[in-house]
Length: 97
Image (cartoon, rainbow, N blue to C red; front, side):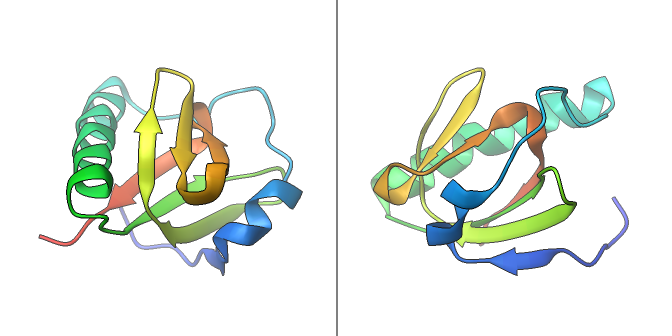
């Protein structure tokens, strides 16, 4: 994926964002890789309380947030302090090696 400039926001600002219902367009291979990253990010968040960088699109454009992912299901990422991001709007997750 080519680098793009995302607006970095604080996790406390997530509740003010609007998320469209439709999913961001990703290839099947990208979506499969993203699911693996979500699973690893949840392990990192619960086991080591480690943060990751989540790249996503809201109604206004590309955003990024650095936070801990506590849990995830097939629809939602649940972050620290109960904030959520619809999984269908997530483009990538970056974690420390």
